[in-house]
Image (cartoon, rainbow, N blue to C red; front, side, top):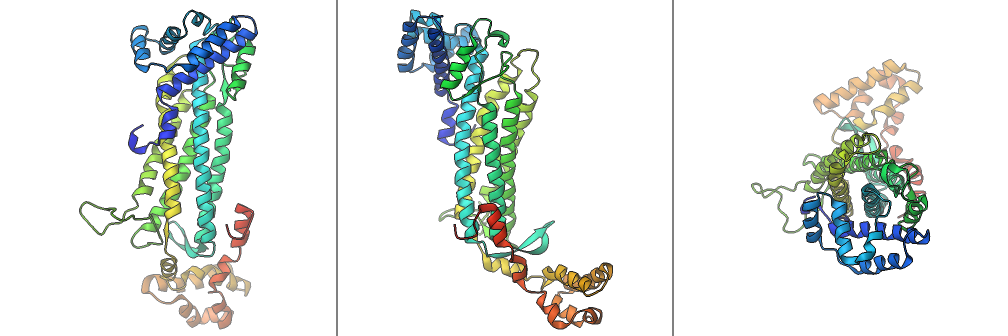
Length: 438
């Protein structure tokens, strides 16, 4: 992943140093189990931990060996033997490369998940705080981009909170899905290694033993994992698009924070663009794109092939690093988001009462007018507002057919803004379990 969209903690998970350290730990834990079973000397297992655990693996040396062997795991084991000495002959007993590679990959995905879960937790905190801040900030709800009926900006943020809470639950499940370990040897039959070794390594790494590994851990697990990342990215995009629309000049109900010294355009000094949310929209596209090759990795030949390997070397780091960056950026956007309640009211009143049309429609039906006639009466007055800039309330009061069914006081009462927000507390209680302040 390019540095521009990377954060150090997530990048470190995918570094060669981290990868080789995990490889060593897998091998060393397996040696512990083999020693307990009497397959290798206990002193050898101890030596492997002492010398390998204290070592700093030479990445250049491993790369040099791999250029000759054309095999990354053998290159690592050869370098480890240079460090450990004669007892290194007991390393990798009965194991195959996939035991190391697949278990390591899943450890890395677990660690990446923990960072992403932390990102989501911080985003949830930010959304909750801003939702309660604007629980009663009335704004217009839109369908098809067109004014519909009033809501509150807090409800908008509560919806985002509920969505990202679901995202968090999905990621917890996806993490559990890939938290499996395979130390089963060639074609996964345990012919040359005792299943108890796998159980020991799994426990040591905080994983579960893969029930049937067929030499590789089944990739349906990974397909689900990367699909989950894609769904989370889509939620990031949904919230980003909402903010982008609200920042448009003709709307300007909310806006990304514009810092001192920031420039919006090389040509137009007046510009304040939603660059952060536009960026997150693009990053979301990339994270989603990684889900498809992960699904295509499911169909491997027989007990194993390596068609998945090149894919995962790319999508593992890129998907997790990109999503981590996007989530962290979203936290900052929500925390600093500028909200303009006055503009919300101004926009809501732009079409002079049209947003109350449904209440008038319902009142007419309750007064005995057919739904078809009620709709026709309300719509013909509404169109005057659209086409001529008329005042909706005044047009209704001047319509003899409407007045024949509804008295003036009833019509005026249907324009009460508070009617539309009377259940906001109920929504907040459902989302947050509380209607009080954050």
